[in-house]
Length: 331
Image 1: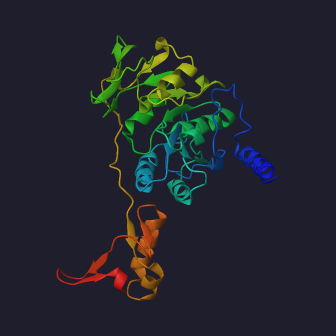
Image 2: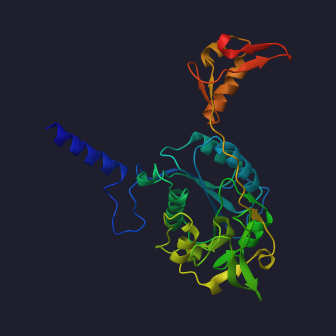
Image 3: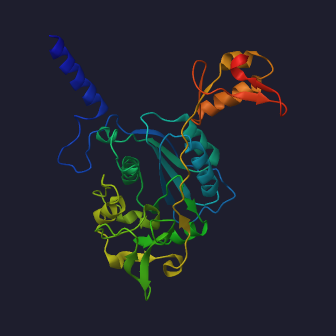
C-alpha cells in the first residue's frame, strides 16, 4: 500500500512539474524539473530621450545565479540603456522569479521580458550546454508574441560596442560579424569575398555548417519559423539553431565593414568561489555602532556574493588603524 501511494504521489508530482506532459517525438521536448515561468513583461519604453523609430531589437540574455550575476547584468544594462528601440529578454536559469534580476530590469527603463527557465533535469549533474533552456524559452516567447524585428543573442558577460546595434538593425535575413576573444585564433568570423560570405575563420570547425559564436549573428524575426530550436549539444548550439532556420550561405549578410572590424567580444569574468563569513547579523545590527555594516553584509548575502552565518565560516575583522583589529565574532 505504501509503495502504491508513493508511486501515485510521484506520478502526480512529475505531472505537475511538466515531465509527463512532454511529447517524446518532439526534439525540443526534454524532461525538466520545473516548467518555464513568465515572470513579467513590460512593453513600454520609459527612455523618452531616445529615438522611437526603427526596427526593434530583441536582445536575448541567458543568465544564472552566481556571485557575478548582479554585476554582469548591471554592466550590460548600462550598455543597453543607450540603445533605442531595444527589448531586453532575460531568461534566468532558476525555478523562481529572481527579485534581483527583476530590480535590474525595472531600473533600466527598457521594455523587457523576464523568464524563469531552469535547466533540464537530466543535465543538472552533468556538463550540460549552459544557456540552451534559457534561449529556448526566449524563442518560445518571441514566436508567440513577436512577428517583426531583429533577434540577437547576447550573454550577460559579453562586451558590445554601441555601433553593433545600428548595424544589426538592418538585418535582412541573417547577418554575421566577427567576435573577439574566441578560441585559439582570438577571433571567430565569417570570411568575406566581394561582399559575400564564402567561409568561416574559427579555431574549432567541429563539423559545423556555421562555425560561429553565439554573439556573432543576428536574425530577422521573419526567419523565426515554428520549428526553430537550439540543440542541447555543447558547441553545436549556434549551428543547430541556424540550420533549424534553413539558412543558406547566400542568405548571410556580412556586417562590420565586410567582417574586418570587431564590435563584440566574448569576455569572461573570473569565477569567484562564494565565501561564507561568520557574523551574527542580528547581534551586529543591535550593537548600534555597526548598524550600517550589518545592512551592507545583508545586501552582500542577498546579491549572492557571500554567505553570512552566525555559526560557521571565516572570521572577519574591522580595523581603524594599522594595529587594532576587532573580530566581528567577538561582538
